[in-house]
Image: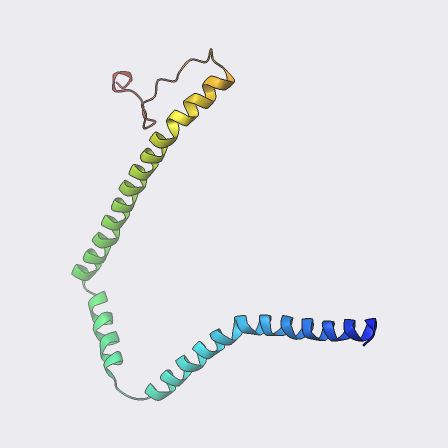
Length: 128
């Protein structure tokens, strides 16, 4: 086998490899859509429990109580998320503050401190 035949063979395998790699990304998605199609086709025109569940959900959506409950859940979830993020941020600042102070002291030993707390908040005596 000479040099050119080897190169042609290598390019064929590389082309096949590229095609398989590109197809492997889309084949699972096509299979999922196919099974969704089969399930929808099997239920088409039939009264099922799924239809009853959608009817109940649509009926509940119209009530004020349901909307208040959903709003409260999302509101409390947002407040809880914000509180936890704040605590994580303070914990991270506290962890990094000593490293930052050492680094700043190396750069400029005469630098004055901002006198923030270890968590990065202002001192209680500085607030009004």
